[in-house]
Image (cartoon, rainbow, N blue to C red; front, side, top):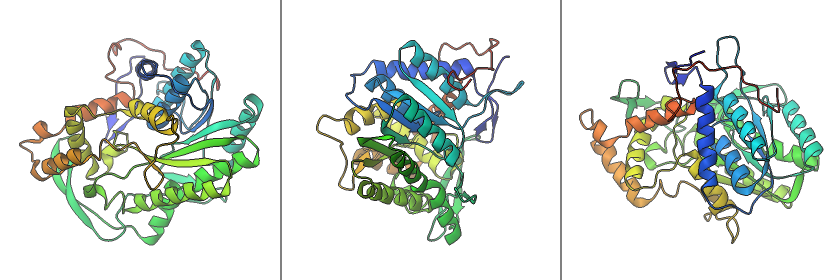
Length: 393
């Protein structure tokens, strides 16, 4: 089957197996080109098939020589419908890991469920005994809790309406958008989905099953961003969820002796959902342009390798700020970078958009997520879309 990208709105409904495989190999090759890390050896990655989660798994495996178990929630190919990109990524990662003598197994299912937690614990106990690191990298729009209630998250303000400029990346048209405040119930539900509750449920379940090593580390991911996005991020409904995440890390350090829990604040990257968030795409396109000019831009694998090598397993111990946050957004939030972004934000127009914003770079990274526009991949060739994940079948 010849597979081409089918983009509807800001969702790509196809994925290319050979493109995804080439993308995974490029990430592995990058880590191999960097110095090794003395770090964790048995790493559980919850949310391991895309973006930061996949990059974290690759960084742990190929920098620390770690065995990895990845929790994914992906669909296999069905008839003429391709599998999800995460499925192909995981299949490729397991294939490369096996060739390189690295343990890699995956579990496909809802990470929020008790069933998947128990299945993971059983696998850890059987194959490893205990894990020494847990990476939590889930970004889902909804969560069903153990009592059967389903909560949905929203991206809204929490105080008042917020109006600013945005861009429709399909048409490159700049316009004004107003974001309405969330209700108290919407804020509560967003915290239930995107806060730290499930992260803590995982750590509690692993601890009670005696499946974590003494001194094990766990890290979850967040984003803060610049002041111009604070009304919808830092101070918005998602910001309330992230504050809960930070509190959860502090709580777990108190409740689970011997555990080290951290939150890593990462830089802005292109994801399937970020294009649909008002205001954010224009900011990303502007900051990409500036960071590339200054040779500061990082993709997911570059950032996750730096987190593993220079922050979590640094020779002197974990590197954090005064709030115990691992600041991987340090280059994005540099004063000179943000000063230029704000200047461009205040002057960008339809006429100078192409000059100030990295629109092409944005779309390149968007298509790469799904295995398209990868160098040296023949997209006119027939490919087998029915690929199994070795440890799943």
